[in-house]
Length: 499
Image (cartoon, rainbow, N blue to C red; front, side):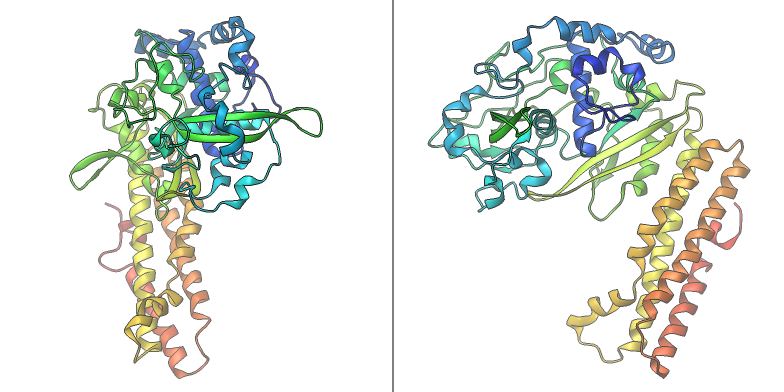
């Protein structure tokens, strides 16, 4: 495990025992970092190192509840329980795949979500055969990320010739289709305490290995019904993939992995709301669903939904209900998601938003108004692009219209630029002492992005020819933008008016 700050590698035991001395954990990607936190939380639950009530949780967060008990529990387990390469009970893996690893396995790139490419792996994926060893610690982190975020698709292994036809069916991991929100404290210990859900229920199974479990795990001859999660430790350590790794030795003599077999894992029943206490919900077609990552809409544009989860206290006990009780405590909310197009992984998305209990209404207001202003500026740029198009192309072919308009539309530059001013707006709102300061920050934000929009449009129009039609298109597009930015439909922040 790699920790933030000094960027040193430490063991799970060390991370838990000295959690208050570490800034956090950091993997190669945002998703890998979340997967590490999930595993540490699973260990805390399995060792019953967690608060039992909301009042206990507040005490834990404020006074620093004891996390070394989780380290003691972990250290007291037999060493073989935590061996990635144990023949019978490999950590986090399915030893039933051993007879097929050499024939059906691929290079370790298959284990890393971002390197595998399209998860319809019946395609010809030559890059997966590359045998370059992957260090064992990196393989462990990649395995945890697969369990939590693994995309849906088809595995490379032949199910009919191995454990059964449903072995190839890769289901999406429990975090793979929604935004995961983590409350970040000043240290790893703070972060763990903030995200431990108070419970006095039994922790349930700790999914240490596929071949050792309280009840038999699924088979692969037929698709089984999803199983019910039996406790918090179970939830955070679900084996979302059947994985087996072949041990090797790197050039420097350290443990490594040179071959991996990846196949279908456990299936779960749909999770209840209390098992997704960080979820932010949105209403789509009349149905309330957890917020999903989007390739076309940046996470900061959904910040208002995040603050609404705290400001609207009518959804029962969850992470946001508890955070709202921490009067005077400033922290950050870290949102992470994986974007995939069908079976192909595109990218990780993540963003961080400030949160101060008692200020959630102002933060929600600033986020909503900030998003509204940004949407208006984007629509103004699109209309200005349309004006430039009508003058530049008086007789266009219908098939060329969208591409020609896109030539003048500076909306992409606007959205890329606005992220930073929006975060400045939220930071100033978190520090504001009254509503007037919040309104002032909003007006300043609006001025910044409106001025930038003018620059972006002029840059797009620079491609116009230096003739009468080009000059006319430029002038009319700029006039249209300026009039729309402060027109009757413009938000008050852009017109200088106050409600």
